[in-house]
Each structure stands twice: as structure tokens, then as C-alpha cells.
Image (cartoon, rainbow, N blue to C red; front, side, top):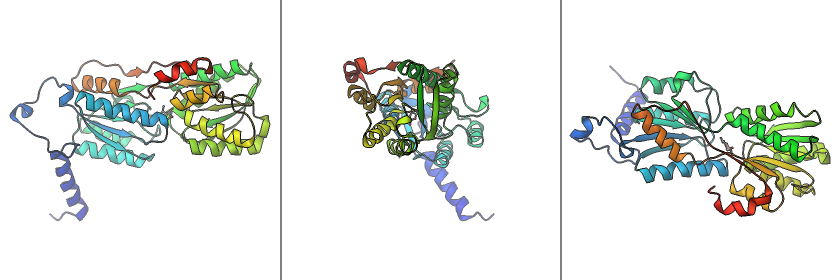
Length: 331
Ligand code: GYE
């Protein structure tokens, strides 16, 4: 049988990955390993993680939490950063399958397009845990979801906005990454509450891809088109809010005063903006998921009972006590 060059390379890669750990160290096989421990501890765990990128303050804190917790617990972590590309996440999962990790955590960049590769993991007997973002796949293709209630975050943002604006506003919306779970649900949750307020209108809604640079650009476009008709901004994350603040200042208006801003995440940058009077509120979305993730991973691997959804506990923050709270913030 003649194998193609690609097939030969794949076999060699599979062999190398199979005998090397994520750190590049060979996986030592002693007799006790071969006999397979019935109950694994953190030191026995090999966990794969496919992170979507590094687009925001939130994401950086999320990655740090996962890496630091793995180190503290002695878990072997195989971490891949997809740099905002779904195809890189698919490739990472395939590598992790070849590496035969115990469990795979993934923060899917968008909701759709995962069925095939999740099925491949399932066929290989590797459970998938969704971390931070949900994927729109059949229930049996993942074991659990750890993360926030994005719909409720959107509802809370609308409730705060209605309060701030006394039920009257011309709103522009900075949407997160198109097709991502937080953008989809923060969009829907906000509108659900807005229905109760006929004098709160959305003038325009556009994606700023969860980044500060895009948030600024999109806000510049809104200002060019609607000028001082805009009375409020709803932004799906703090980075885009910070970009919008800059755009509003350059336009010659006062963010937080002439145009009120409600944001999501509650990252340090948002607290600084609230202290400076430029941001009116931020709905918390907790990125520090490392400890809960590895606890869940261990339960899954040991066949212990675990919930289908582990929700994060979150609050809402306003400028009045931002100065006091800032030193306690961990991201
Ligand atoms: O709000 C945003 C990030 O998925 C909840 O992604 C996360 C979101 C977060 O880029 O800042």
C-alpha cells in the first residue's frame, strides 16, 4: 500500500503527539499508569483548551485564570489560541483528539458550525465542556456549559438604561462579534425589556467585534450619521465602550453626560471610566472561570454527577462606589 505524503506526515504527527505531553515532555508510562487509576486527581488530568482569541480585557483575564489555575492544581494543560478564527478552533480540537487528552474545554467564537468536530471528539470518547460561550449543537455533543446568562445581562442593561433615561432615549448599540452567543443574547435580552418602553428607540445597531478599535470606528460612524440626536449607547462589552468614549470626546460631546453609556463586563477599564464620570453603568460578566472549569473537568472524567449548566454569579456596578470597588477587582 502506498501512502500519500500527507497521510505519512499525519501518522508521524499523531505518533509524536501521542507520546509527548502538552509541555513537550514524553508522557511517562509506568506500570501503575497502565493499570489506570480508578479515581483521577488533578495531577493525573490532561486537559485541552481551545480559546477563541485575545480580543478584550475580559478574554485576557479569562485565559490567565485558566492557565494560572491549571498550574496551581498541577493539571497538564494543552492550550490553543485561535486568534479569532473558527477554523483554528476546529484544528485545535482535532489536535487534542490526536493527543488523547482526558477532556476538552472550548470557548466557541460563534454558536454554529461545531457539529462535525464535536462529533469527532465524542467518537474518540473525549467529553467537551463549553466554557464562557454556548454552541448551538445537539445536547449530546457536549457534557456541560460553564458561563453566564447573557440574555439576563441584556435584560439588565435595558432595565438600567430605562432608569437612567427616564424611559426616553435614542439609543445606538455596539454589538459584539456577529454570531457569538453573548452578542446574540445581549441583543435579544435588551429588546425584550425595551418593548415595555415605547419612547426608548434604537436608532442604529452595528458590530464592533468586541474590540476597542472597532467600537471607536463604529461610534464615529453613528455620530457622523445621527450627531447629537444620540442620547444613549448600549455596548455589549467594556472595550467597545472605551472606544466609543474616545469617539464621543473627539466629536466634542461629553460621554456619560451628553450621551449616557451602559456596558457589559465590569472590567477595570470600565471602573476607571466610571470614576472619571464617562460611563454610567456596567453589568458584570465574570471571566475568572478557571477554578470552576477544572473542578467540573475532574468530575466529568471521574464519572461523578455534575450540572448541565454552571452559571456564574454576577452583579451590576455604578459610578457612585466605583472608586471604592476598583481595588478589589481582579480583572
Ligand atoms: O463579554 C467580551 C469578550 O464571551 C462573555 O467576550 C464573553 C465576551 C465578553 O470579548 O468582552
